Length: 90
Ligand code: SF4
Ligand code: SF4
Image (cartoon, rainbow, N blue to C red; front, side):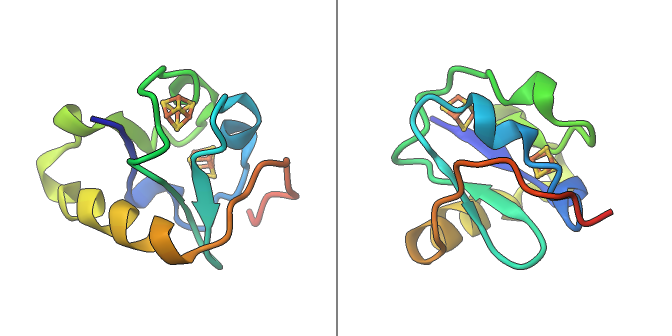
């Protein structure tokens, strides 16, 4: 099990989430972040840091965003790791 980043993350890039992750599980593309399910230890520390409430435990991802479970897994394999705070996009 891991945590999953979903649709509300798009164009946020607030990235407070990455500063609290103990295992550097976040990866980024141009518009959103994803969590590597292999690295994530399900600690939940990133959840309260996310202002858009985009992060869910895998088993509690809302129905309309279930496709993000696969998307996080696939994108995390190819995208660069992000570990430092960035300037938000919006
Ligand atoms: S704080 Fe939430 S919405 Fe913002 S980049 Fe992190 S996961 Fe995405
Ligand atoms: S649940 Fe914990 S380990 Fe997983 S991405 Fe969030 S902070 Fe990192």
